View 1 (cartoon, one colour):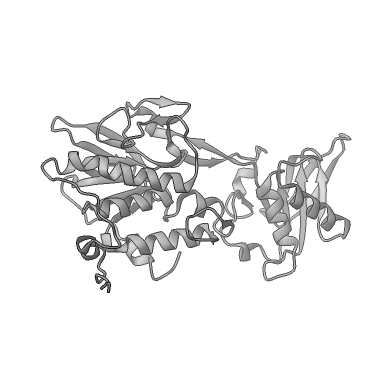
View 2 (view 1 turned 180 degrees about the horizontal axis):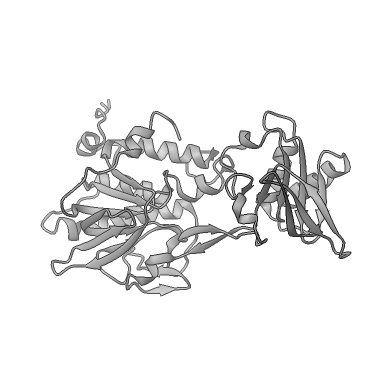
Length: 366
């Protein structure tokens, strides 16, 4: 994240004796959740944003912060982190309050129609509307299940790479057969500041669910002795002086070999968990929230769902589709938040009112 954006993002609400009363709460601080802040802001609706991660950005920042994204309109290419930073800059005029590192645990409709929302950290809200932009739910890595290995989680065993420089110069063992495993193996085997001392890729079979070009490149690197591929499964580990020193790999020949290492990177994929959302009384179809396509309302009026968490006929799980859904959801919320206010579609190019909301000067046209 751009350090200049951090103070605005990391602000949390001051302590309240009672719940925070607000017009809108957004669950999820990924790209779609952040753009929901923007669309609400244009309608002069200020939002509170809750996310289980300790930083904004959601799936793109959690899974591929440095990988290129090519299908954001008018942006030929950007990384997940760059997209997040741009969205944070775009929504800065609207002063959203972020509550990070906490999960929504309770949603209950009150007699006055508002929703009581509580989080795992005890933050409470009374909100007129709720926007669920939680992606496909909370991601949990699929774990490598070897007795005793869990003691090294976060010190020598990792399920994601946040800072590649942390692994430079190390003897790495990477486990997995998908894009993440192949990509990181190639990354750490290549010349550059993040080059590892050695890279050994382990997969249970000699077949990969990854981009064919990268699989071919991986095999070429192995032939050139720049890295190594071992076909087999990790069945045990060894320790020395309280540290993980190696893993035991059993091959298809039933022979078990010890592979020394400094760090073990595991990429078995991520398992999305719907979590507490499943208990909020909303209509669910295949772990997704059913919505209409007029205003992206769920089965409970006042609760909207945008992005990968929702489903409807023709649904496409694309960021740009989520952006479109945010606009309609914001307009759909207006009759609930401001029942007596007439809403007119205005354009940011020509509307002096929107220029004022955005904090920009109105352009003068000849």
